[in-house]
Structures are given as C-alpha cells and as structure tokens.
Image 1 (cartoon, rainbow over the protein chains, first blue to last red):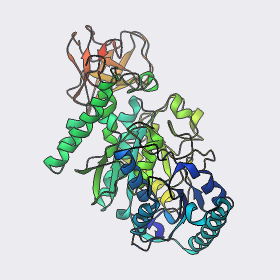
Image 2 (cartoon, rainbow over the protein chains, first blue to last red):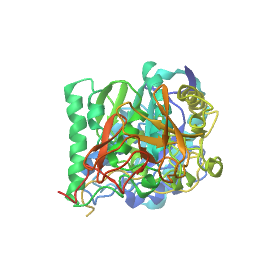
Image 3 (cartoon, each protein chain N blue to C red):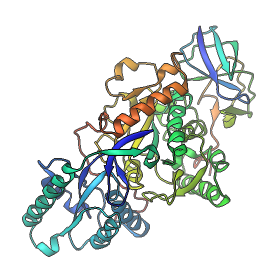
Image 4 (cartoon, helix red, strand yellow):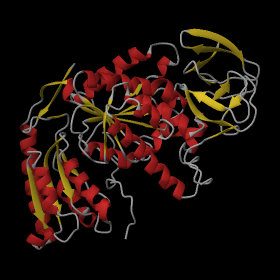
Length: 397
Length: 95
C-alpha cells in the first residue's frame, strides 16, 4: 500500500508538517504560546519538566524532548531555553540537529530580555512556517510508517473486536517493512509470558519480564491491591474482572509479528518490526513517549461505556496534534451516543455484519486517508490545550 | 438469539455479546462450533458466565490463559466477575 507524505532531509517521511515551538523548561511554557500565535502550522509544546527532577528522570526527559522534536511529522523546531536549566538546551539542540531538520535555539540568558526572545522566536517560527508551506506531499511506501498502538477505555469487546482489528493493521505495516510500537507496562501483567514467547532473542524476552517485574514491584511497594486502578472502575463495569484478563486482551492489539525489542520511554527503535516500549498506560504520557519514539500515527482501540463518551481520549483531555490518533470502538452498546466522536466503528463485527479481517481492511483504508492528510481525526481537531506530560518516576523536589 | 463467545478451547468462561435475563438460552461460539448454554441469572453485555462448574480455588481461564482464581464455587451459567474471582497480580495488599 502507498500514501502521500512529506519527504524530510534525512530520508524520513512525515504525515503532518508542523513547526514545533518547544521550551527546555516549563518555567517558560508561556513563550511558545506567544510565539506560535497566528503562525500557520506552528505548535506550542509546553510541558511538565523543570529543574525539580533528578537523575534518570532528567536523563529520560532530555532524551524525550530531543526525540519528540525529531518526530518526522515535525518540519522544523524553535527551541527555547532559559540558560540555567538542568535540561541542557545546547545538548537538546545538538540532538535535534542529528535529525537533519531546520532547528534554531534561542536562549533567554543570551538575549537578556523576555520580549526580545518572543520577537526573535516569532521571526524564526514565521520563516519556518513559510518554508514548510512550500513542501508538497509525495508518494511514500507503507513500510516507511511507524505505527503507535494503544488501547483505552477497555472493556471485554476490546479483546474480542477492536484490538484484533488494530492487530491486523500492525501486522500489515510490519509485513511491508514498517514498524509498530505498543507500550503500557501495567497492562502486560499476566500476559508477559505470552509476549516473551514472541521475542526474537532470550535477551528481549528477559527485558519483557524485567519491565513487568519492576512495575509490579513498585505497585506492591504501595501496599495496595491493584484492582480498582487496573482494571479501572470503568473497565470493571465493562466486564473486565482482573488485570490478567485486561492484559491478555490488550496485547492482541500488537498483532502477531515477532517482538524485536523493548524500548525505554521516548527511545527510538534501532530497527524495523514490532517493539514494546516500557512505559505508563496513562494516555497523556504515553502519547509523548510514542511520538518521541518516532510514531507517525496512533490507533486507539476503545471499548464502550463512560470513557467512550469523552470527546478526546481517556486520561488525555487535551489535543496533541504531533501524531494523529484514530479512535476506534468495537462496542455496539450505546454507539449512537458517541458516533460523532469516534473515527471508525467496528462493532459491526459483533453485530455479525462483517468479519474482523474486513474491519481490518476498512481501518487500513481509513489509515491511508489520515496519513495522506485527506482526513483529520477527531483528536486532531480538538482545541483544548494543556502542557505535554512526560513520564516522571522519582520525587518532584 | 442471545449470543456469547469463547476465546479459546481451554477457556471455562464465555463473554456475552448481548444482555441476558435469567434462564435465557445463549448461542455460544467456540472457534467454528456453536453450542447452547442456559444462563442462570441476569447478566449484562460484555460480562462473563461459567461454561462449566468452576470450583473454589480453581483457575478461571480466558484466551487459553489464567485470568484469576475462583473465590467460591461457580455453577455453569452463572456470572463470573469480581464477586467470585480474584487476581494474582499487583497484590501489594498481600505483600
């Protein structure tokens, strides 16, 4: 299969053409908003990072910011620093340059004035926006895609219909030489042995077990029964009884390809094929981590119930247009109430009107439309904004 | 006809694809085969019922894997959910 995308200097293909305005620290989150105001395709990308974090949190967040800027859907980057933050603006800038895209670093310490920084930022963003607008889409191969797959607002229909349908698209992209990434470590508990059996090496299998063990140990240290948080009360209402049941249904969304590797949060895969990212299930953090890993587009597989009535995504109320998200639901119960906020409905399988394979083909066609820019997803059209959430494990000081 | 699906031959529960009332007969798909089971209580869409008697302490199986353990005897056709199944995982309360 083929689609239309924007060819980047480093050979990658983008499906959107964004000018990202990114602060190195949350202290200056207001600046990207001031700068991006009124500039077509400019996207302010404030976030939750400041000097209040330590060690591995700092390391992960610095890597995540640079890799997020490197996402192929982003044409160019205006990077803003204070000059005193722990997340070295110079290091992030150098890491962004490795993606061979237009990038400029502006630092408050060097300019000495907030308004001057804003003025300079606007000029750079406006110039990049004009350059981006001159690019035209070209034909690209399906195998150039990196797909993100996530399930949320799950119920028992997720494992029966929408996750298997997502798996068909993952398998197809991998067959054509592409990459698919799924994550959510809490939602492999009880299914890690099934995933590990698909690992290409023992080392990869060990990493799957290690990721699950570490997450479960942290839960145990809280001294609580996970149930009520995983599965969530809404999951339980939808019929999911234990985390094991939820996990076994959840991993179906990753299709049937061999597992090539386990990534850290926000890390780029070193090859093609199927990868698991060790990270949180919470949607807002997951979106940033998978976009940083280079995902072009995400398939979000949903059940029904209350979470499916949200106009955006469960645990992600704000827009994140770096990576279009296709919302899919396979629950016919109450579908009428949410048909205007779901991109693709596959409950037709439960109703006996099509097979999982046919629904998968339909999702593939939708995918090509969205990737080629012929269609915007509901999540892309959102207007409510919040700072991006990057995973933090340790204390906030 | 009310419908349900069994995800794997090894399973001892079926997932309902419609709401059911007490004593409804449900058409259950297991792979290519279809059988009929009488459901013994009102159960909502998406929830599970026992395909056979599950004794207290026995594993509850779905997708051909263990999803938990029965905390009481569950007779065929009865609702299987958090009131009679316990998870083995993320049990910091027992640690």
